[in-house]
Amino acid sequence: MLTTRFTELVGCTIPIQQAPMGVLASPKLAAAIADAGGLGMVAANSMPADMVAGVFDDLGEHTPGVFGANFIRHFIDPARLHELVGIAAERSRVVDFFWSDPDPELIEIAHSRGALVSWQVGSREEALAAEAAGCDIIIAQGIGAGGHVLGQIGVLSLLDEVLNAVAIPVLAAGGIGSGRSLAAVLAAGADGARIGTRFIVAEEAAAHPTYVEALIGASGADTVYTEEFSGGWPDAPHRVLQSSLDAAHAFASTTVGENQNYYSDARSPVLRFDSTTAWAGTSGNVEAMSLWAGESVSTLTRVQPAGDILRELADEAERLLGRW
Figure 1: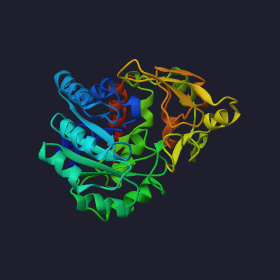
Figure 2: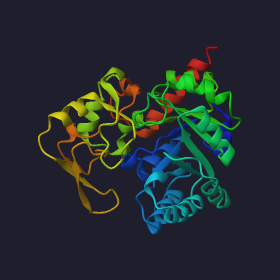
Figure 3: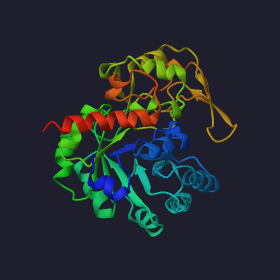
Figure 4: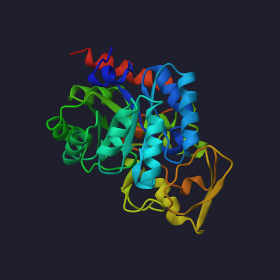
């Protein structure tokens, strides 16, 4: 068993936190991850308060595993965020934050309602700030991550800096998609890993088939670190498939397609170079949308149930670490 401080603290059996990948981080995916022994995450950013309560109450009724809520503070009014964090914290084991400075007030709200707090960071200084603010878990995100990226160096180099600076559990993120890379970060001293790209091709993630097809067979060299898909999220570096950036440049129209809200029938246009996630409810020229992909994309070979992916990662890591 890959027992770490993270698994002992959170109560899961596999030291993997599923990354909150926007609309792909749905309750269905989180439940599948939790059922298999990992920490499943739901992206709760765009939900109204009553929906947050309903989604997490339902998760608690349908999985005996461990799950959490993710918030991107940058996009939520502070007064509303305090309410949402409190609701989620009462119903989930972990409340997770990204793309903002650690906030002791938010952390205290989550703690007072019984939840642990994790914060994703991209540097030693941010890790120290998260620990000082009262966080329980730090996610150290390297530059190889897909989607929006805080880290500016590789994950192993970042772990060297962060692990020497803080005492709380640290998860590695960015470029981890195989049992071999999971074993590498555990051997380096991480307490687990946050994994996103590998789970995009999980059956439960409901990524758009065109997106899945583009990911399968791609390599890390087929990704690019850029700021071009900045519509709706400016000044935020991210990693996507180079092919999607090329297709967006070649696309002649302003509107690339349309997105349906995961939790309702509401639809909205997808403009060229928008920051969006192509899922089953997306239509249009998906090839020219922001197809997030980390450097671990070469590990994606087929669509699988999320639980199978999780166990495959853990089993391979355990075999490799057992060789020592």
